[in-house]
Structures are given as C-alpha cells and as structure tokens.
Length: 274
Length: 71
Image 1 (tube, chains in turn yellow, green):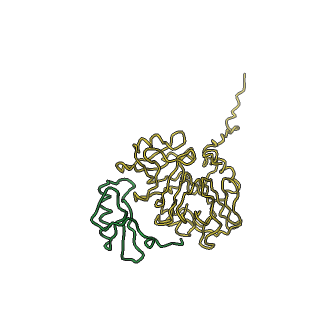
Image 2: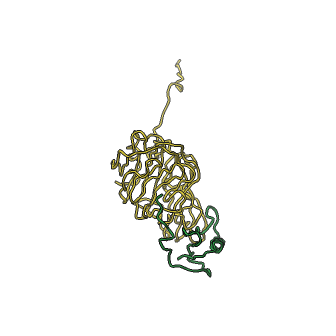
Image 3: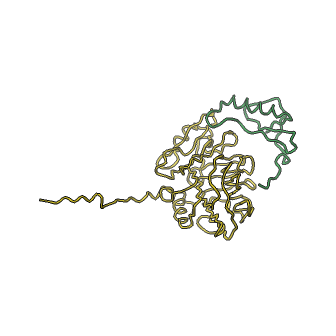
C-alpha cells in the first residue's frame, strides 16, 4: 500500500517575467507610451491614427509585441497617417491626444511607417504635440526614460507639465526645468539616443545618454505634473515644438536608480541604439 | 500660407468650414487653431491646401507674430 503525499501546498512555482516586457520587469511607471508592447497584460492599442485620404480614424494595436505596421499601412492606404492618441500602457489611463488635425504628429508618410533606427517612430515637425489634462503626479522625484532624436525646433520641449512646471529636455540648451531652479544642465546630444534622467531633490539631477552619465550634480526641487502635460511641445501644444522623433517615453515617479541599468538594457535590446 | 483678419470670427468660420468639408470624426475635431498677434487685434489661420477663402492671404507670418517665449 502506497502513501500519497499532498504536496500542492508545499511547492510554489514561480515563473520569471518575460525579459522583453519592460513593465513586467520594472513595474510602477506613472505613464508609459511606446510603439512596442511594454506590459504583457496590456490589452489596449498602441495608438489611434487618422489617415489623410478621408480623415477616418482607427486604433492600431500590436503584432508580435511590436506596432502592427501591416494594419497601419493598409489603413493609411498609400497616404499619410497621424497620431490622434498615444495610449498609456502604465495602467493609469494617461492617454495623450491631439484633437487639432494640423497639430497631430505623423506616423505614416506616403504609405510607409516612419522609422528611427530600425523601429517605428512618431515624427513631430515643429508644430505638433500630444497632451493630457489629467493630473499625472503629485510633487515627486522623476525618472524618465525615453528614445528620441532631435532634428530642430529651437528651444523645443520633449515633455512639459503646466502646474508645477516640470519640463524634461529643452533641446537647444537645457536638460530640464523646475520652478525653483529654473533651467538646469546643458543641451543633450541631438542624434538618436536613449535618454534617462534622475530628477531627485536629495541626490540632485543626473542625465544619462545611451547609458552613460553625462551630467550630474544638478539642482532639482520636487513639483507635481498636473493641469496640462504634453509630449513634443509646451504643455498647451501652442509653442516650443519639437522637430524630431520619439519612439518611447516612460516616466517613473519612484526611485529607479537601482533598476536604471536593467531598464536601459531592456530598451536598448529592442531598439539597438548603442 | 496663412489667412489674416482683424475679425476673428471670419477665421473661426473658415476653420469650421474646413472641418465640415474634411468630415473629421473620432478624436479629431478641427483643422487648426487661430493665431493671435501679440497686438491683440490681428489674427491668422493656416490655410488648408484644399480650401480657398476670400480673405487676405500671406505667404508666411513674420516673427513678430511669435514672440520669443522663455517658457
């Protein structure tokens, strides 16, 4: 007679998160915009687009965890397509939108998906921006990671928030701005880069370009991000427009100094920037 | 190219007519936004490539329309 052991309550199997999905491995982003799938549990679309031919709009989701460019280009039907909404994958619902046609950044040009490096990208052409009126964060330290290239736009902003006025990268001359310290740091390299900043009121501001610490010892005072916040322009999408491309913008408002290299590796493994 | 006017309502009407003609739906609600000159009396709107109006047409707007903004 054999004895049957009930061991189901003794063994707990744990699976490691898939290293591809950035937010599975490094959770807690305040906002996250990307043209790749960042969270394996996210079931929404990447972007909503408007095609130039007849102004119809359609959500574009992911295929094999990347932007479904086949569906996108079929929808664009040989014309241009513009982003009306870039969906937030963080789970916080901070989608950024643009209701004015002329201010919508482009994602398809004459039927072909715009790229930077080898991956799809959103192109801003000195008059575009996407914003939200949601209150993204109370006064905090911030840890943004983003992939972008800058082609022009004098004094353009990558990310700007109205109340609290935290501004991330003014392209011609400053790393960031906060209401207490005004503009801090110097201009970043304009070409295709993975940028990360540590905006920490205790340890100071730091800038990393392609994983290398390029600026440090900068002053930072904590402020909220609320009222209007924009990607690619001033908060109200009425000035300081970027001429350049953005593929991914992920904002944390919790300390990521211990996870920085892991996040940067995840991003670079996908985009092959450096 | 831009249409200019001292009567903002003319430019609002142009923007509305372009929006109706283009049939924007979904997220998109209008063609563009009206630019206000810092003097407070002149206005401009970007001309849509497909639609004409009997308004004053300017090739471009001078820098005086867009004063340097520190922030």
